Image: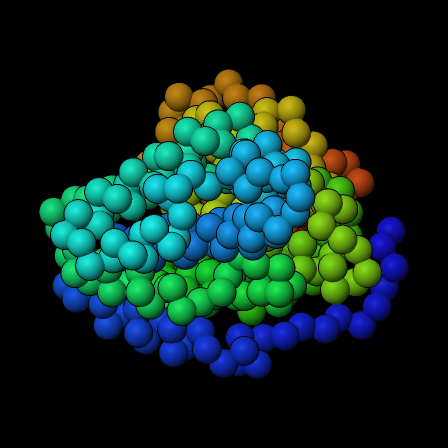
Length: 357
């Protein structure tokens, strides 16, 4: 087990720039829905992060005798993703005022994907690639690129401060607030997630979330491990997400922190297509979409997961609990957030499934 030490954390309040950055970005939203704008902003932030890490190594290689800064293998050898010329942030920033900037961003993401096919699943090739759509104001897109250009995200100094992680997390929180109730589908309040993770204490082993949203449970689990003397890699990440748009978020959220994971190669419903049928996790953490009525139970009556009886087809709550029991190791524990939806009972409660069920 990892050595215990007193947790320490630098919060968003200590950094002090996320709120200013959010306010500036939100002004550029115009009439675009927050759910749509979310992927525009986060996709650009992710691209800037990759480009910054690339550029730092590019400058280093340019000064080394015998090194070729345009050789992709030089970057792969140091676990840095190769960024083609048309995908580099400096190129996009120089073209930010062009009416074709949307096409250029799409082309950049496509080029980045092609250049890194076969790399480990740290990079989410499902990042939004529709910046050329007519509904996206190209002038505001250019202004957004100029705004993000003011941030250093992927160089060694800012990686050590987790600048990209903190910006990303803050923006996720603000987008969830802007979307209201629908924001709960991809983002769980940070204080709730931290509390649940502390209760479970996932020091090492396999952590599983069958409806992972933006991946907050995974991020906080890694932070918990590091805060108590462990390191990234002490836990293994498994999960899936049914919403095809939301599925992009945890891929980026984990990638910017260098956290390896197995979220499958595409979105999938945990009931209808369990991506990890043989997984026995050491810890399960989830913010569940409770009281789902149309969950497909009528087609799953003979499912191996129903150890304690067939769940009712009109409500998925009992199915979720049995899904947990099926996937949890006999000696470990599961915890989940129960979102109350009954009149007069707002808010959340947390539930634990004891070991050995």
